[in-house]
Image (cartoon, rainbow, N blue to C red):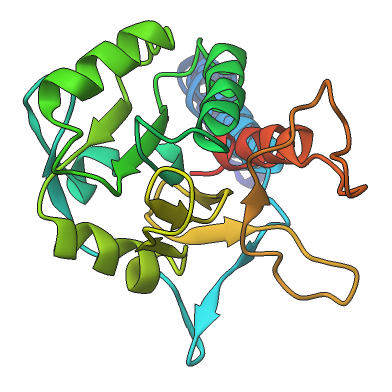
Length: 251
């Protein structure tokens, strides 16, 4: 009797294992082929995507230990549309201060900006913010004509006019780019020929200088073709293009 019971036990165990194999092993295989491997591949792809993200080495301009962010502004552009800093959120953009009747540096600055515009023509998240420091003359109509003459085609390039005091405060305090009236200079106004670079989150960014400090601004007057000016100063448009490309890859 004990031998028969033992045989019956072995037969029962074998039968259970057979049923388990028929029912559950295919499910386990399917699960491995489906969910688990898919999740594993998905995790691998996520890691791969993370690895592909390029965090740039560009520095933040810090004031009192805090990264400097573009302050609020609101002006009218060349199309008569109100433009604020909110319109530039999620975009990398270059900032300049100019005026349309400038007889000296502005034409050179804007020719360089047009070249930059054309370099990044395929990027919807690139723009330019141009603020006139002579808003009494530079009306919407004047800015529109200026934009057409310079072949400004980027929909995110806004030439803005508005309250003079607000513009000057934005230049001198908001961006630390000098602008002022001076009847003794050609055109009656003087201003920096520098550009500021802003990232997608509205922070001012730049590369390091030889001492590890942020350069803050980019020279906007000297073209890539010129390479240097009469004083031997090197052009920084190529540098600016490289850094725009870096910021466009950031989230």
